[in-house]
Length: 274
Ligand SMILES: [Zn+2]
Image (cartoon, rainbow, N blue to C red; front, top):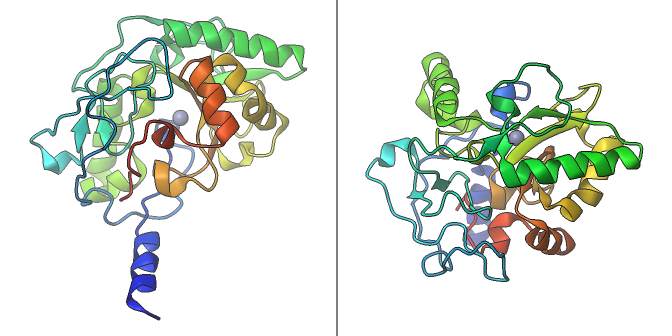
């Protein structure tokens, strides 16, 4: 084996894959990531000059001028400059500003797998309205959906993460739980969806269900994308999650879906695992 193929192998084996919906506590990591937090922060070309605009274009900008925070310890590499953009990119590399909280959270009028009016039922206004249309569209096709988990505050993510740290230590916790600020659920633009029976909610067995197939086929019409695609784990840093949809607006969603690409690729961001 030559040196470069060895390097490729090593890189591949060090990919950190975990789920983006760890608050549900229902799915353990595919495999442990030993060096998820030690990757060298790299600049993100294409993200430094663009300006945010409410109308997505082919060069959308959710994250424009990112800055490097002081705490390398947190694993946070860059903080997004425009957390309120519907194109905001939040992943292992890009974090929301500390204590960010969307100002327009509402309760989408759709069924959830639980009855309580609590935080995880909320979404940002625009995303909530789009979600209501998506659920109605599914119903027309004979597909009954239910929300599982949408918004998660920074405080909630912190408490979830700190609990894991208490039990497993920070390094291990990072392999299966998002560091506070790095969970897409904190944007208010993402939601985990299941069938109305709640079966396989945020679990691998949701893949291949008629609900998952409907979502994959139709989400973009309503402005949502399947955020963590199969085969794109090395770019998103997450395992395939057919239940986790993210609002980006219809124009971007349709382009992303038709090209079969990730939000990272759409925004010309570097793969998070590099
Ligand atoms: Zn999720």
